[in-house]
Every structure is written in structure tokens, then in C-alpha cells.
Image (cartoon, rainbow, N blue to C red; front, side):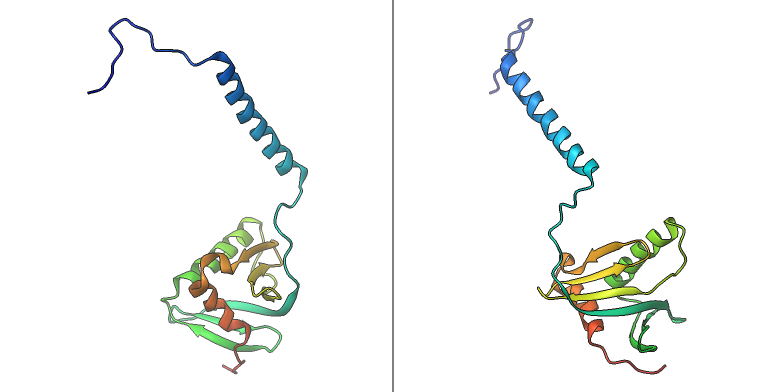
Length: 154
């Protein structure tokens, strides 16, 4: 059975001090967040030093797969079939950012292995960084194998 107020009765009002306190806390949080955001302060933890950097191009293969080219070696290091959704969606997001910013294919992407074991994919054109370990070890492993893959001539 629920307790309902009698018809015509007004519900009990919250104390004015409690309402003022809640509104003040909410406004303070909004102003503080806006101040940090507008100040340009980077709130991310600094990245660990890079141990390895590999410059990679990702090309669409005629069969729907993705070819990965090591730019420095000038050779293919991997071919992914059409089933690798994580690789495709990550690259699609980076390519969309390049197109939105008015860039073409531009410089190759940088796959960075860091001293703390983290793996980062960086687009030097847009300066966008994808921390690959954020997507779990299985998804990060897709890119991790590219860091040490042997180059083969097509």
C-alpha cells in the first residue's frame, strides 16, 4: 500500500538551505570543469617513453582485406582479411578525422610501443592518439603483432 497525500494537500517542501546547497555544488562543478577545459591543461597522465616506433600505411586490398605496409622497410608486413572489425573501425575513425580536417592520406600512422607495455596508434597529421590497450588485450594484440612483424616483399 502506498502513502498518498490527501486530495488537496500540498507535498512537503525541501528546506531552502538544502536546495541552495545542491544548486551551489552543481554550479561549482560545472564552472570548475569548464575552467579546466578552457585553460588547455592536459589532464591525461604523461605517456611512457617510446621504445619502438613503426611507421605504417594501411591499404585496402582488392579482395576486401587490409594490407599493412612498413614505410621504412618499404614492404608489406601483414594482410588482414575482411573479418577484422577492430582494425577496420580504428582505421576508419582515424581516416574520418583526416578527411574532416581536410587532409589526404598524408604521412603514415605511427604504431608506438611504450616502456610501460602500452601500445599507441598515432596520426601525426591530426595528432589524434588511440591508446590501444583501452580496448582490451585481444584487440590490442591485433596491433601488437604489427610492431614486430617481419617485412615481406609483395
